[in-house]
Image 1 (tube, one colour):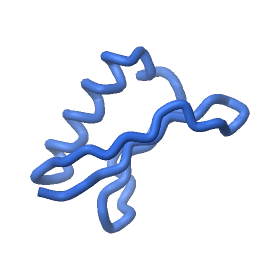
Image 2: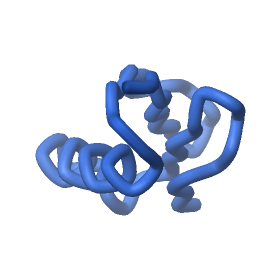
Image 3: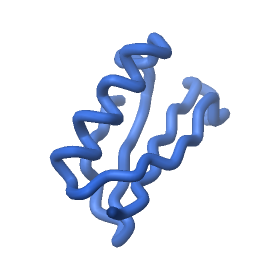
Image 4: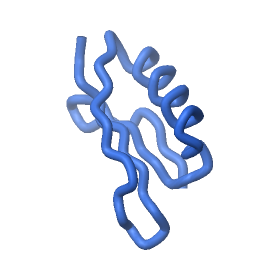
Length: 61
């Protein structure tokens, strides 16, 4: 399992969510991150999900 970082930003750059997600691979992390964004109502807010090596897995502006 690896640790991925999910971050959500306001238009002014303020972080409104900064979560660590543990997942077996990029696809699992993307699924978990998407569900978390939906649960918190942030699916249309600027966000990014990055892998442990810095790869951008999910991004919305």
